[in-house]
Length: 381
Image (cartoon, rainbow, N blue to C red; front, top):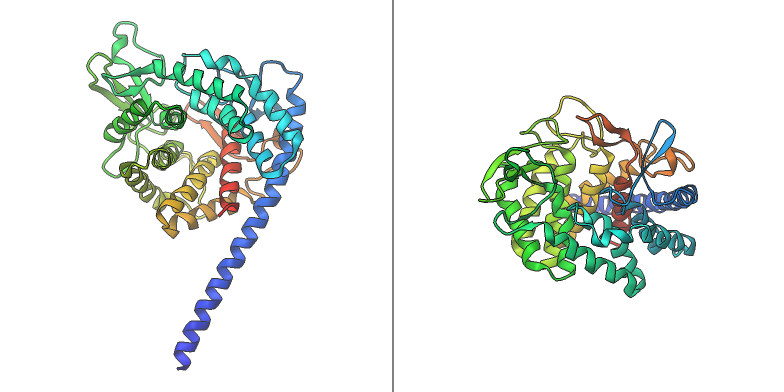
């Protein structure tokens, strides 16, 4: 009897301890979001006079800006829409609308696959939170522009426009990041294109261990694979951390958008590959296979947001536990920038493109976006 009582008391103690830790994490995240809101408002005030540009990163004491056509352009207005949703702060809404409208020209832009990032993070959140038909019209036109990049022979939306001068048809490049642009297409009703792209990516991008290549190069005339390689990772055969994050998030999102079991199964496979490769603080090295140690907070934020959503679909507590570990790290002094510092960006220690030595150990607009999204998802549990 005493033994049973002791076991019961230990179980209760464990439950209470877990509840206490989660309440502490939620408190930390609420505090972090307050800092994040103040940072974004200060950054908006700095950026208003810089017409036609949006903030991308912070280097050598200066905010690095980007034109609307840069793949990162939608994250700054997007994060302000999210923070407005969380706080109800009308000033954030005003700034979010202002910088969202700087992207209107993207509705007719056919030069990139990244319109999902650029338009759906900005205009998508704007329409979701306001119902203003203006925002919806931009999303619908941008989706029409995006599908012009779909090649039915390959079965994918083309990512980059590069190509060999002598044989341009041999360089039809598709990157794992492209999975993130399918949400907008599903939302607009382009189901066949979005699902064909996702299915082709499942077939060709993943290795036997369920890690993903960064780039698959196709012959656009035949659909045959020319090469599998990396651009931003350590090597062609390595696991670039943010690429693994895009895959995890992309297939979890595709399950949410379609209800198709095969996408949930693929997301679980990717998750099971990622889990044992994360370090003690759960924030990945920029590449799982690289000797060069450089944390990428953006990859950690994307993973955390995806793990929370995947937990909701599977009830696998390992996914929630990992997201909690990642959020504790990101909300700590090690990664969360103090108010007024870091160029008014939220997270420190992101890695954009280490092989090219660009955006190394700096804040990144997309890291901020997915951290705020992950924090809000966790607070909503």
